[in-house]
Image (tube, rainbow, N blue to C red):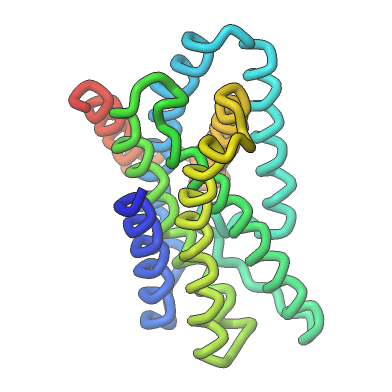
Length: 247
């Protein structure tokens, strides 16, 4: 639990601090990382999480419903985040009041998403094999770093105070570790049954599917052939498969 929390906190913190240090970070600079992360996360979800969920638990219909629920819940979150969780850095300025509201809604939505990621990392054994934790944690970290970078690029345009920027970064960096702590406490406190944790895992798997597929679609909006993107995607998928075989 402690190691996971530290890794999640540091990855978000480093991504955000890099964005604050490099003031002219361009969306194109993180696209390759995003494609790799999306491919890795998608592959882990397909080759491990979903098969284990459907194989080891009898209530497959409800598992499918929660996966769908997580997929479309992520779509709702993107209404508030404008895709920052998969690397978008679009900034729209329409007055101070709109800027403050968009910053608050952006932080709230991303923290909810990060919190849910932390809760499932607290119980990798829910999907049968605790050795899956390493590859799952890697997938989360790989998309958290560019997400934090994009988040702080946006917020640095909305909040000019460096203290405010750092405070918001710390809040975001703490969201996933808090999710890990809460996730560990759910079972012993009797607040969440094993079946409940399974459904939560399925819900977040739906989140992962939405994020990873959106990265693929939006990395080539004109659907042009891109051999570099294909090679990076295959590399991410290959490493995900190999990591599952080795763990």
